[in-house]
Image (cartoon, rainbow, N blue to C red):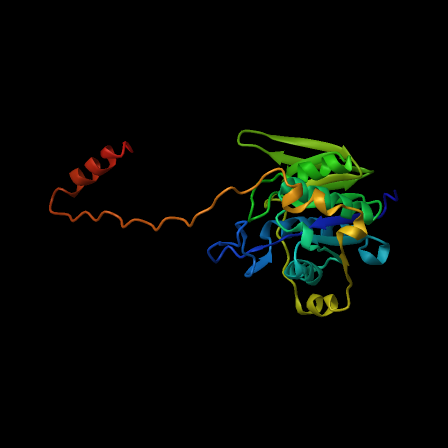
Length: 268
């Protein structure tokens, strides 16, 4: 491993836009991803990768930032946005057999895709996806790749073959070190992600997105998707409509009525 340059893989995900209500579709109650965007939390991981690369001279000096996503055809938009922001390369793992994969099946497929890319120095992820919000994939992925993991990093530094990160808790912070190669998930406190500018958008048109199938990475279809998942959705139903609130008209006793309302619900 050349410590003067870094090869970083950033996991990016195409998730439903939080501005709209989420919906399930199909007999398997899968998330409807028709209105999706690059996960906001993944932008922090991408920014961290770009800053590490730029501190070492960027692509011109041999550093590589690769945006990797897994999903159907539309998921390529997450990679395209990453390239516009500044990633140098994009990889899209897409196969019909991946549909319905839970965290375990997802981490298995992503681990194989990363191995397919050859030796890497860092795998960076967001702290969670904004759709599932489980934070399971980074830890599972590190285990499958045999990499030391540092999760929920609010600062990130790489020096002399070691990654150092600060993890902030409710009452204390701790510094964690791990040798490279390593996997790190970062929080939304680690940096301020940049926006794609006109130059970046135009440059992204010349960048390559490599599409991989399960056959390309040597993964059997039966080990991913619904068949390879450890969890399954047994039933789902629409969220019940919100009940109309109680309106208290002030006739001189509104305070008493409000207290009675709260007391009846054991809120005071």
